Image 1: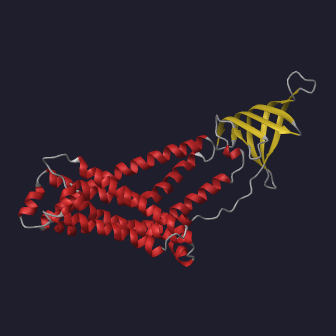
Image 2 (image 1 turned 135 degrees about the horizontal axis):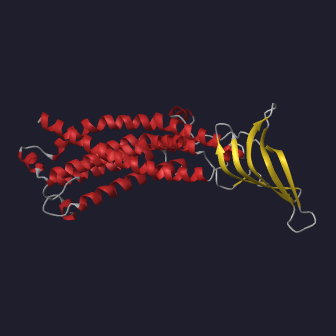
Image 3 (image 1 turned 90 degrees about the horizontal axis):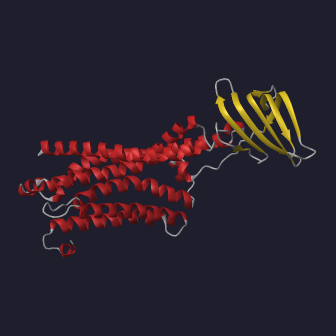
Length: 360
């Protein structure tokens, strides 16, 4: 029996690794596409894409690991039903409840990891992500210019276009600047330029060997002038202090400042490891497959249970934040209901003549 349980845990682990790689790959791909879109628009730098991607993916780990654990137990036990290994299990005098021990031996270390991530590491990753976004938002206009993309300045009085940027020596090539000053529009073009910082800290975009067009073409005020050097002062944005969100606060701060929003966030963080453990146990009765019948019904039911569980957790968090329910009711009520469902599903599988058989 010990050898069988060890092989079962190894199968759980192999399935979990495969499921986690797939889920993480989907998450990273979707986030990468989103961040690349932001980088193309100049909101973030291309070098900052991977930093934000790492922080964001790290914050998703508790949910991904919870789903991974559920899938690993569900798929492994479903295979045992399909390959008729369950017949041998039941014929040896063991019941379905005997699966609880090997499932718990595999699930508990992952649940502890989920608790560590949810309570400590995920808030840290969200904090670092918010800090990095704040740094990106506080950059000056030129720093937000993306090569090959028109970029409007902060106060909408200038439009920049740079075909190429050399970050090593701050050189720019094929520069176009359209500015509006005193109700007059001026356009400057230059083959090259560079960024310069004065002794007092002011930053300038210096254009070399270019032209300046002022006024409307065809009017008497229209002028074209050439210049060898033209320095344009760049407005530096003042650093804006952002208020940290509840998701980025350490768990101790949520406990020390129990506002409604903080209590809702606390219920979510505590609920993730609890739900992961209950879902792993729910996978035992939900994994039932009749080898002679279709095997999709149990998977559909399992997915439905998972979606309902997570949505109810989110609703509970929102209701606690809105003070519609208390923290104990929102936290323990959901998990108590799922434990009741767990007991009902086990009773359905263990009792041949239970009323639940009529709802197969």
